[in-house]
Length: 91
View (cartoon, rainbow, N blue to C red):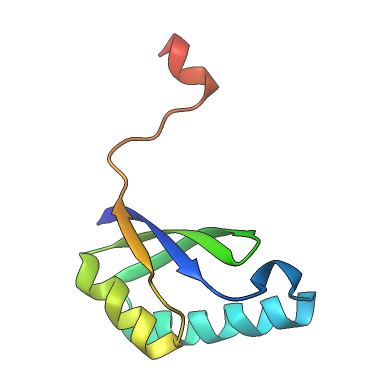
């Protein structure tokens, strides 16, 4: 599995209420169940008119397939090569 950052342009997503976000998560999870084990959703950040989602997937094709099934755009897909954080200084 490879890690990817998916940028999704979704108008006004930053103003969505809890129920709307729950509905979006449910829709995404249904698509993930159909594609299992090719793809896994790790987490998403919601900011303004975009979400930034971290996924594990076999390849970009699995991400495009999830996008088609869920109805959520995969505006930009970027492979994540490494992760660093404050502790990286000491490792």
